Figure (cartoon, rainbow, N blue to C red):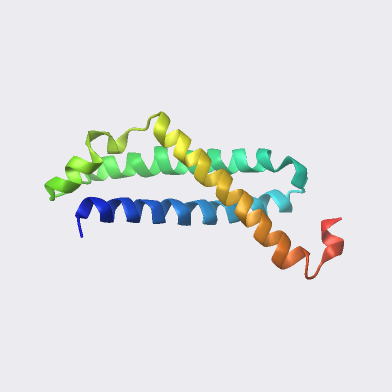
Length: 123
C-alpha cells in the first residue's frame, strides 16, 4: 500500500476520533453548565475554539520547538512545508469535524442516557 494513502487514512481516522472525543467532552461540559440544547451551535463553537487553540497553536508550536522531522521523502512531499502553519483549509476541516462530532455525540447522549433514564434531568 502506498504511504500517501496510509497517511490520508490515518489522518481521517485521527480527525474522526478528535471530532468525537472533543464533541463528547464539549457536549458534556455544555450540558453541565446548563446550556439549552436548542443553542447547541454555541457549545459547538466554543468546543471548536478550544480544539483549534489546542491543536493549531499549542501542539504545532510544541512540535516545531521540538524539531519534529521526517526521514521519508514521500512523507515530506505529502505533508509539505506548512505542517507547522495553518490556513483556511485547516480551519474549515476543524469546524466540520468538531461541529459534526458535537452533533453526533449530542444524539448519542440523548438516545442512550436521556431516552432510557433520567428524563427529569433533561427538563
